[in-house]
Each structure stands twice: as C-alpha cells, then as structure tokens.
Length: 456
Image (tube, rainbow, N blue to C red; front, side, top):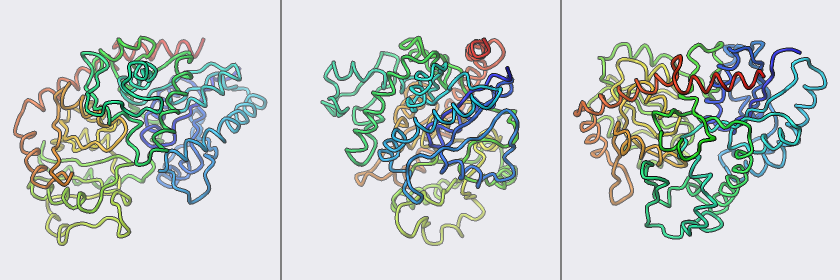
C-alpha cells in the first residue's frame, strides 16, 4: 500500500480550478498523492501559461481528459460545455480510475470533486469509492442551490427556475444577504436554453452533494455564520490558500505579469486602486471606455488587469483616444497579475472587483476595501455580503443608459477612500478569517478531521 491517492476534479473554469488546486497543494503537504483532472483544453492553457515553471512533483500529478467539444469551439458557451461534459466525462473518469487501480500501488481511494461536477461524485459512488464534495463559493450560494425544491414548493420559482415574481426580494434567513430574484445564479446567462441547462444541472448536482461523505466549503464560520447554521453537513475549511506552494502550480490560465510588483514597490503606501474582473467578465466598448476615463479622473495610481478578451467587438481592447499616453505616469495595465501578491502589497488602497468568490476571499484575507462591479453568477450575492453585511465596500449605481459612468467611478473611489471606517472594518474581517485557519481555528480543526478521515 503506497500513499493515499485522491482524484481531484474541478469544474473547468479558472475560478473553480484555483481553489481546488490550493486544497490539493495543502493535501499533498500532508502526504497524499493527488491526480488533478483538468480538461485537455484547460490543461494546455495552464502548461502554456507556466511552461517549465510548473513543478511536476511526485505528489501532485496533472491529468487531462477530453471535455467533448471540438478544437476551436467556444468553451464560454456554458450550456453546451455542460452537456458535452456529462456525455463524455463519466466514461473517461471511470477508465482513468480503473487504469490506475489495476496498474499502480497507490490506488485511488477517494474522489474529491467540485460540487458543480456531480458527475464525478456519481462515478465514485458507482465504483464504491469514498467521495467528498468541495463547494468553491460562498455557503449561501450553495444553500440557494440546495433550496431549489423549497423555492419551487413556495411558489417563488417555477420548474425551470424562472422567478414567479421578479420584484419580490428573496432572503434565505434573517441573517442572509438579500437576493433579487432575477439574480439567482442560474439566471445570469443570455439565452433561456443555457439558463434551463444550468438550473437542471444544479438540481441534479444537489443529489450528488447530499449523498457525499463530506461537503467542504471555501469559506469560514466568521464570514458566514448564518449560512453554515442552515446546512450543518457543509463544513468550512477556508479561506483556502497555498502560501507554501509546491513550485508554481497555481492553476492560472494566463501567464502572470510580475513586473507590476516592481511598479507597486514605487507607489506610496495605501495609494493604488487595483482593478481586476476575473476570467469571464466582458465589457461593451462604451462601458470599457467609461471605466478607463473614470480611473483617469480618480487622479490616483491604478493597476488594471486588462485581459486580451475583456472587451466585446472585433477591434478587441480599445482604449479612449490618447488615454494610454495621458495615464503613462499614473497607471499600469497588465494582461494578468499575480493577484495574491498584489492584494497583500502595502501600496494597495482598494480593490475594484467583479466580486467572484476567490477575489472576494483574497481581498478579505488581505484587509482590502472593495468597489463592487458584479457581472454574473454568484457575484451579486457576494456584492451584497461586501457592501450590506460586512460593510467593507461600496456598490456602483448605473445611469439611465445602464452604464457605470466615469463620474460615478470617481465619486465612489473618493467616498470609499475618504472614509477610514471601510479600511478599519476590512482589517477586522481579515483578522477574523486569519484566526479561522490558524492552528486550532475552526477551519483548521475541520481540515485536520478531514485528513484523519482520508487516512483512516
């Protein structure tokens, strides 16, 4: 019998790959052997981004399996991707597990799967292998998914997840953030077919999650006490981070531009606005240019992550005329940044964010106040946490065009950075979540119990 061997299966999107990679790193340090499954498409992206910097070590082994889509097909078509994953991956996962368990001493004894990949938990159940689900977002987001049958019974949504009353705000409990019914995560897609596919995927995943041996969540009791009270089976082990990484195996899909760290070294403490919108957010040209002009108007140094695919339109990223020349001494723009290192840098004043859960957790863990610009999925719920519950950030208001104007950006930057209470509360929240993962903290104790179960 060799090392305990865990098969880790994230949903194939960067916001899901990174937390499961961090968890895998932490498990590897405990002596577990990890086989980490990416789709072939994402595996290539990670290898292209990091190349020889990816340390292939004996304990974390990168595995690639097909997602069912052809080369060149758009992986951002979520509905189609989900359908092909369910057609192809159960069979290829079974074949991989069977091959390992027939030929190697370190047999796969547990499948650790993203809760959004219920198909992997179903495969483990079929093969009689222990299974643990990981929810990489807020526990309240999971509660809203697990509450789907009740929401239907209570007449709040219909059988396809469509709100019955679009004007009635929704709250899971008195301590939970309020959700607008049109902001349920499965509704934040452009076409009705994708909305329906995502909704029924979550209904299906709920069964896999409810029957898993463990359900772990990348959150902490201090961040979401009300949420964990609603689902006692779901246990917090966060905030996940892998500060002592094994090499550079981070799960990023883009190469990081580390020159921005030297640029940050030259800025005054607490002066820089950091702007990053994750891997999915896309702007139309009007909004993109308004954001650029708003950053210029703020008259503060800024570090802006501008992905090559962040703006709609054939011309790609298109800055306002003369903008780059005018802000040459004020701001820096990069294609991708080492976000953990940026947010922990003393020069950062605030984080203008899409409010994805990984970004939310990273900002909170570094005591950074937020300006909230959610795009889709759970980001509206996270915005509500940041601005309404924790009170460590501000929301933007849109004008009659549905645009966040340059004047609104300038105003909210001044309001956030002009009120020291935002920073004070952010630092208090940072200390709370740091305590949860310290020796003896609530998340630390649960993680150690999980390790004991894995080894038993």
